[in-house]
Length: 405
Image (cartoon, rainbow, N blue to C red; front, side):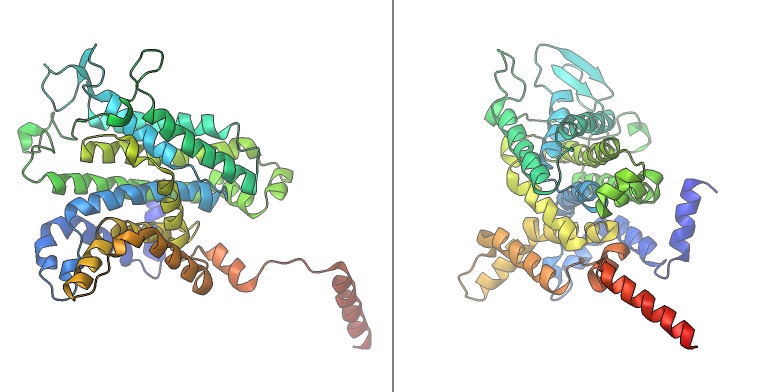
């Protein structure tokens, strides 16, 4: 049985087998029924626009990538924004007029008379993922020998270093790498220049249905990310990650190569962050250093915690919820509150609100909205060692009962 067939068989055998195809169908149909949904009473005003959903999906992809590092392997990463920045600037370097001294075009959706490097965005998404994997390996190799709080502090440092490099990268020995605080803009759009003859848009930015096309491709990328994440979890490598998360010392004693396995977690987690960063940069047509600040890493980590560490579906749901609140929900709620005559703007207190949400989750549902089965059992039943004295006492009592019988 093939890999895809095996995954499909497990979905069919699940008691909620109808849920996955229903969500996929709703996701595909959403941009076509958006106007009808926004006309519904009570909830219509809270329905996100298609453009907002593109941003939500991009951040959810990053959260699923971070879940590989935090949820699968148990490595606390506070610098994931670095991978987001590398992916976005890869798109800026290879799909803009930034390098004016050269003129190279291959499969792009812009005119050939424009200076700069202009590759096809489909190629750039792959290159962004690969380059971000390399960045993940380079960051992981000197840091993954550390554990716990020490690892978190070092990754936090890398998360702060990369935005500073981006912000001050307009003069590396006289070479303009990142355009400094101005950022790189405009970045070429995604499109189908080769397939434009059959009716597909050559350039999404100039298409009449720009947001709809961007959303459909983003939704496809999210499905691929989730599928790859599921397959990685069930693979030999995924089982090694989980063993390291449960007990790193025992995993090493059983022959799991710790450094190599943890580096793979960093690299593959970075891969999805880079692809999401490049795609989001194309959607907003720019890569700006103000977008890559430390709070983004904390925001993504909150998505993982809210949904349930190690749970793919939980992280997806948690990511969509927090992304919706951040980019649309809180402002909509604030406008409703202000229209009722109250002077309160929740967007001013967004990170305080996210903090309250996480505190409440830790108190009442510590395993997350959709917890991973193993993590849920650990929290509900507990994991503890039986004292040696109790083991001896229980053994003696058992032997005495057998003798009396």
